[in-house]
Image 1 (tube, helix red, strand yellow):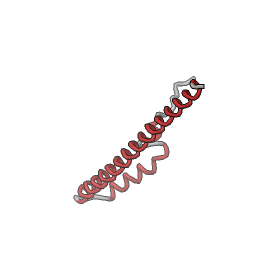
Image 2 (image 1 turned 90 degrees about the vertical axis):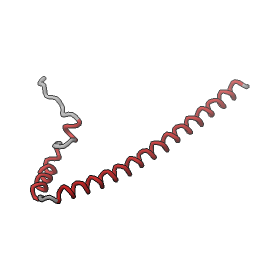
Image 3 (image 1 turned 45 degrees about the vertical axis):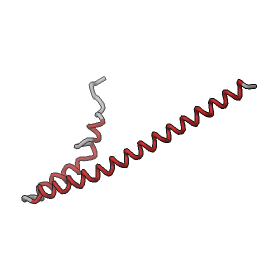
Image 4 (image 1 turned 120 degrees about the horizontal axis):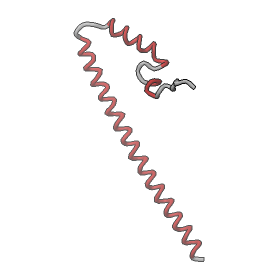
Length: 93
């Protein structure tokens, strides 16, 4: 038995993952091609777009979580009511 450990989740799916080498090389090539002072403006604009997209995604996730919680609450309530009626039917005979 050797000390070969399986790679962790972050090693497999993070930056520099097993299937991700070509993407890293493409990013390096893009960075070397783009130059000049306008790249910081482009980066700032890109960050603003990313923040806006993240905010929209967070709002959607929050809405989905609230709707899911309401469904769980109503389902639990209905289940408890059903169990109470079943118990009352059995004990009232």
